[in-house]
Image (cartoon, rainbow, N blue to C red):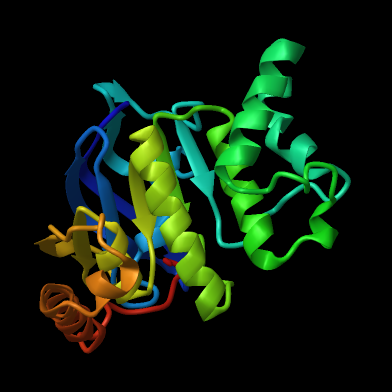
Length: 264
């Protein structure tokens, strides 16, 4: 597994004749195997930060994975987006194996990877179905498995369940928890859903209104071995959730610094 260090990261976009700051001086350390979620007002730069860690965007400051500076995308990081972006002409198995095949993984090893991940995501019997034949929750499970097929040390999740209905979203949250416990991956997730962040994470971080800075951190020490209903109905869950919600609300009420920009 791997940890990450974000040091003095800032990012500006061009806008109406002058730069618009999306992020300013973000510092964060995520430990090996830790699950960290970032919440905050719309447009505060959450997704921008994730894309910088993924290597899709440049920035001022630095991002390091196990001491190696990020200079672009890499196989040590896997990204799952809100929109699954599956290849419609490939089956479930074909989508999952796209990365390993492109990397030249031998056929027998690819078959083992596919069988293991299809079992992990509970889609046995759907291996030869195409994305159009799957529900939204199934497609997102395939997207997650496709990312895991490349065995990244770090999972970067950008609102991965935002397009799902409430019941499917809860199911996928439980699936993600199970997969995290099985694989021990380091996870950084962006979400607008405070309850989701608290239910899933070791730590929940709150980002300010633009330009985004990390302004609050909450440690979550829930016993997730208990049934979901026992966790989310507990006083402890409610107390942490309310603290995070109030922090996000305070930031949402702060004025942004001039202009508009796409910041996530």
